[in-house]
Length: 274
Image (cartoon, rainbow, N blue to C red):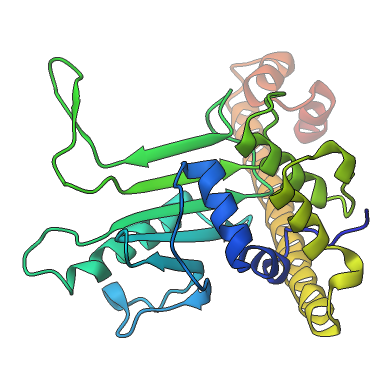
């Protein structure tokens, strides 16, 4: 089935701002059963801003009965890991305003999807950070803070070959990047609902316009990155050639030795010596 890729923010938010889909995603990745929410906010912001930085959460939902906040973020290629740690901490800090002391009144869970980046930890498509303290001598962990806050990074390009529920979500999200998903590969009703929501025929004209704008921004970033990379290569080459010229001037090394030291070809060193 032809679908709109989930690399686009507008499509990612369209899909997972659906309450039932959001709850299913959270359940399969985090094991949170019966999340009691009736809405998922897009581009949630705090007023006044925490830390004097006006940030926005892609998707934000609060279960007031169970005292838990779940935020879901879609990472872009240029985003650093620290960005999402900051978002996670800001959501925790915001909750302190309603506390009589420094105890966190709610649990904050941040789920970040990286759709165009390889996992930094081989063999793991999902990596998690918590705030448990660890004994220096025994390595034993202890929970001191009352709430089990979590920051979870999901790298959707990772494929384990397993039938784990979260892996099926990752496979579907990654498949969408090519603009097509074979729904016969999935039996999870929530994933099938995801496919239906992002089906090409269900994308509105306004959403298509936003996709084009996002594409143009990504293309501009790619061009800028490529230019910067090319400039870096040129500057590096110039430095190596200058080093070769300096060594040639000293006259202590052969052309072959200078080529070995600098990584330049013997022919290029000979050209510089002419």
